[in-house]
Length: 166
Image (tube, rainbow, N blue to C red; front, top):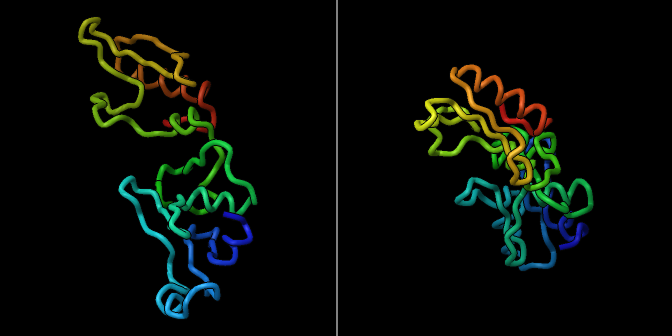
């Protein structure tokens, strides 16, 4: 996919994050009747907006990065607000895999309600852990839940910076 081809067939509204099919002259007229000036793509099973172009499925946020910068992203594109189909340009940013994981919400099996905080039934204490690049960079135990939550937030700001999930 070239930028020229993408610009020829799709329009990206960077304020709304929506994609629209343009009129095409390289396809049968029926295509324009059915698709031109309509929203492109749909939401996949993971909640991401995707668009199929010439039989290839592209994630809309990756296409948005390519459309706006002229280059394919080297790593990942993160949604600042964690809404997977919110592809407004102001909501997208470059991220490494590790940074993208920092901005992720808590696991489904989390019982404390706070990402990175869990109860140790063996030690009868709250344990706070924080990872960067798959390595534990912070681990402490606390008697009081609120102290554990506060320590987790401070550590997240220190180690995850703008990708901190509070």
